[in-house]
Image 1 (cartoon, rainbow, N blue to C red):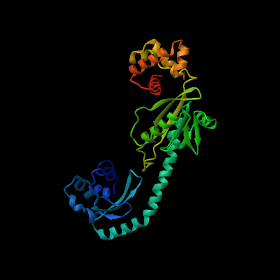
Image 2: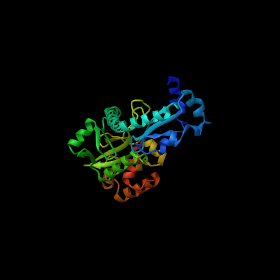
Image 3: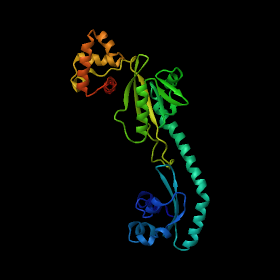
Image 4: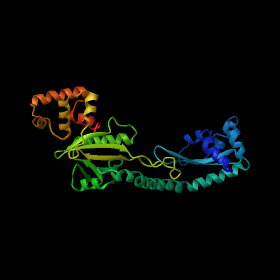
Length: 313
């Protein structure tokens, strides 16, 4: 077939191909003949027939539908000339029956290869750029890759620990949030918030989750979409002095200087009781002040407040 016709099919006619309907409802792994199910004579009036199919000199097709994944199918088809059609159909049906097994194995091998390359290419660059503990996980929180800071935390059972390659956070609430957040993100449901605060052994951490970008989804190197992965970054705040911009907090939430000082104390990891002592105010005052902060920021819990404040760090 001339290259120009192939390009036209790729760019336009493949999208309006009336036989696409046949492939959508075809049983997986069963060869089918379009001349029996949906012959070309039924769409002789269409643009596809008159402007492309006739020019090829071929007017029928034989193909097979294969499962590339739970959400994606591959249609393998050949367009045949009408001359000697029955003989050609029988030959292609036999060929498809013989190669269906190897094709399925090739699809699986491609998936494994694309996963491996995708992990190496997409995740490695992200991990290398992070001085914080950073690691990549799949939907089940199984560790795919990790940088040195994360590995060190795993070894010393810091905020991060790992058992059977499954990651856990030392803060129970943060661990539950991480499991739910990764699952929601990788299922395409999105996140209400992509970072939270966590405490471990008197230190405050920021946990953030994002999607590892796919490696050039349009590349011809991949005909199967690779498994989605999540990047998790754990940043220690206590030793970094990572405080929100006080002017922005004042302008955004109308927080007073005293309320901002309490916010900074909470970010440093102090409890309300400890913050009261540090700021030289009574416990009653600190409780009243935190209620005012909750009201102004639209939050209800300290963890929710800290997560909000971290966005301004």
